Image 1 (cartoon, helix red, strand yellow):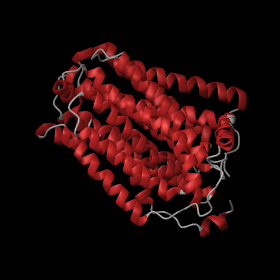
Image 2: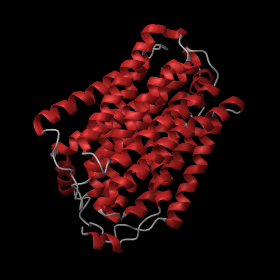
Image 3: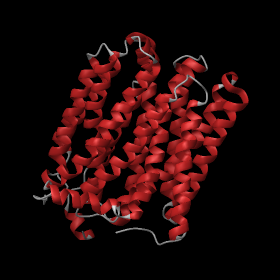
Image 4: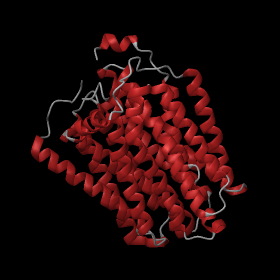
Length: 408
């Protein structure tokens, strides 16, 4: 699509897109400070409560495959309204849950609804913004993505200190309902000409097959997935580390959230500034180097001081890791989506499925390895950052480190 054609498409409000994109991540973290209390209240092992995150990510990953095609067929706005409605329903199920399995099921429904925001936001950016503006816009939206999971534990910790854990889901239900109302009132349709054949099985397969058959797309999608996996494993591992292993109070989770926020936002901000000055693969190599170094440093702290370590000792390498994630995610998102115009919705779906699928595997591994140990997070961090680094080295060996920027 030409820049002149894109100028005729109504541009959605960036704050609304940020809200759409960040409510899901906020819902990931807002209840995490209450996870130890949920385990005690429901009389289950902490690893079972961690599966509430895995079920959420599974719901997100599977639904990613459908939202893009639905958005191509019916438009961005109506599909976003359906997604916000499902998100609200899932939060209400969690709100009235008093055993672990309904909670796990409600979280999966929440994941199905939360997916819509990310898919529609990315597709709307691809619809309405010129190619030379998208990376900057994605960087801004990913800054909101960073803020949401950092703000979530702050509010969640306040609730956990004085209120029942069900209130966490009352907050999520209210915010989900607000998203539905804002979408209905303010989100314009950025795809005025829908694709009537987008849901035909053969065409759907071809739409999914096209990005899957593109080596560059898979490269950027898997790199982003490993980084998102680091984010989510940290979300379910940090409350256990802080409350159960190091024996600190829920207020310490606020400190963790702020440190993570500073790390991620600093990386995303630097990425936005450097994206016009450095080639993308150089930015990715720097981000991966920071992420891998932070993962090794986290393991070194665990080996050196174990449970006798202070919060600052563990928080420094974790923040370092999130700085690296902030460098990688905006670049990988922009480059994965760049070649796909007419099937932006389907490409966004495959991107989300790949990234959330990898993140789900990471959280499942975290739950299965759970020992309430200082080694839980370092092991998974190293696995994900190591996989991303191996893939990067293989890609560079095949393609070189200085290909032209991928823009369309």
